[in-house]
Image 1 (cartoon, rainbow, N blue to C red):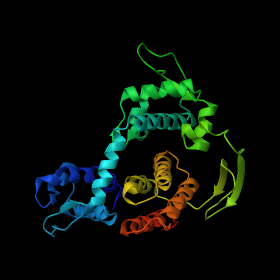
Image 2 (cartoon, rainbow, N blue to C red):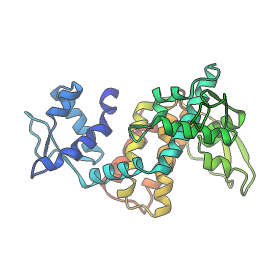
Image 3 (cartoon, rainbow, N blue to C red):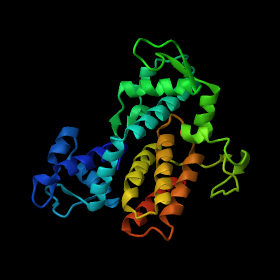
Length: 310
């Protein structure tokens, strides 16, 4: 499936969910969605087949003449959990801060001085669960980041919480580069064990160390498709509630999937980080606590996505 179809996956699943009550059997004719997005019959079947492979849709009533879809129980949970997160003010605030800080990191490293903060609204870093964050949320995020010393900016306009223009500080760069723009993790950095740095020339497997804060530098093969990983990470995060994971594992699973999505969405994603996080996802999916066809399918998909040449 090409990248343009993958970009429609989340929207497509929600569309099927929204139209599932239109027929007593729950089968949804895909023709209106295809017409809206300029898809032909072959592309409609490709999109449906991909969503079926990850267990979110089914095609019980599909014939070769007409594409129809059914939302599965897993797909229903997927959509409802996605919408729950989308409506969570705390999750939206965290996403706005993380997105703005990451965006400002990229602007500094491309040589843009003091960009307009609202410019992030034109970038993917301002999206949360497929929905554009509001300009007021970005403004509040800018005010919060400035108060924490992670960005510095010009004076604010009347009624605004944050600066009109800003750039990332050294502390902000540290947060992005070593803590994946996770402000909570950055603020906990001095708790517990001291930092340990491991510089590793070549690594193709998992690395474990008895330290809470580890910075690893690794040289790895490329062969990773960021756009595929963005969509895969969303599927992982939204499948978490139906995998039957223990609470702690479920939180870790969701957090890692979010990190994968954020890194893969960056202008220059780090293949080493993506492979490490992918391996951590595999460890959870392959643990005794998880079973079922969906976990097996996700495990196979993750393995292929992080394997060079896979």
